[in-house]
Amino acid sequence: MEYKITEKDKQDTYVVLPAYNESTRIQPVIDEIAEKGYNIIIVNDGSSDNTLDVVKESKRKYPERIHIYSLPINRGVGVATQTGFEAVLNFNPKYIVSMDSDGQHSPDDLDNVIRPLVTGEAQAVIGVRPLKDMPLSRNFANAIMNLLTRIFYRVDVSDSQTGFRAITYDALKVIEINARGYLISSEFIREINDNNIPFVEVPIKTIYTPETQAKGTNVVVAFKILLQMIKHQF
Amino acid sequence: MFLYSLIFPIISVIAIIWFIARYLKGKNAISTVILWSLFWIFVSVFALFPQVSNEFAKLFGITRGLDFIIILVFVILFYTVLKMYFIIDKMQNDMNTIVKEFAISNEITLDDEEE
Image 1 (cartoon, helix red, strand yellow):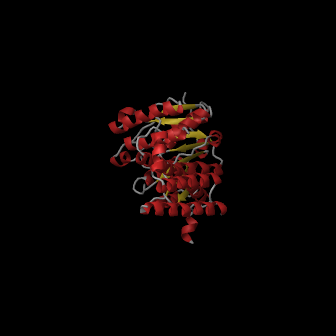
Image 2 (cartoon, helix red, strand yellow; image 1 turned 60 degrees about the horizontal axis):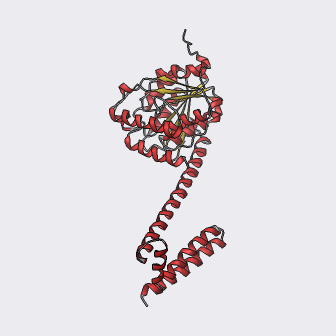
Image 3 (cartoon, one colour; image 1 turned 90 degrees about the vertical axis):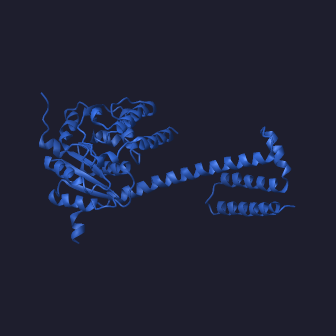
């Protein structure tokens, strides 16, 4: 029988949300996660819109569950996530999740993503997006990135570019993330593999809208990641 | 004597003095001073005695002295761009560290707004 996530498990979990110019999309995501009883670390990545005001609005509703950090300038999703990962250590969480703040990921998947950590089945989880739902260009870029992750980082995963991932506190302290941009997805996988952290893949839902498709790994981003992977070999 | 035969040695002397001055102030490594001094000495030699470039060209299997100088300039430009790339990359990393530390030590609270 499947383990049911308890309120205590949720209290022990912190969800890191990197946010760059997400003022029109982030609020429903935050509210839904907070309503479920999870703690949230929001990192405003130097947004030029009013993302910070919007997240403060959510904090008024859930002052104890939401923690906000703001980078004074835009440094990329990698640096924003790193900031969240470092900030979360101050709260002594058991489980840490990072997911996109644009509504692409469903908070309904949070229970499924942390379950393997809670039951001890794994110390890291990668949320795998269904390929059939993925737009063709994104699907192609993702296939390339999976191949590159296999070649450069010697890890075989179904979705190397997922932004939905979870890790235990102990494992998070071991891994070292330095990526500035979208390379963070592959780097996270490389780190858990290199440090022999047991991980599992969990299927997740993905909600594609024109806005969410504009972000993420397309062919241009894939090329930039390739250059960074080559650089990291030296 | 051509004008460049006069200008390039003057520029070379100024450049070498500049690199030595930076080394004395602790801003350059000795290897940088030696490397750039050699470069500017070569520039002066080529400017004063253009036929020398032919000898160097033959040494590397290149037919004309001018071709040798052009290739040399490309190599130096490539080295300079690469070096600048690494300097910028390091600065980006330093900037990320500062920005992250600043953000982590300044958690946004609602009290900030009310004050």
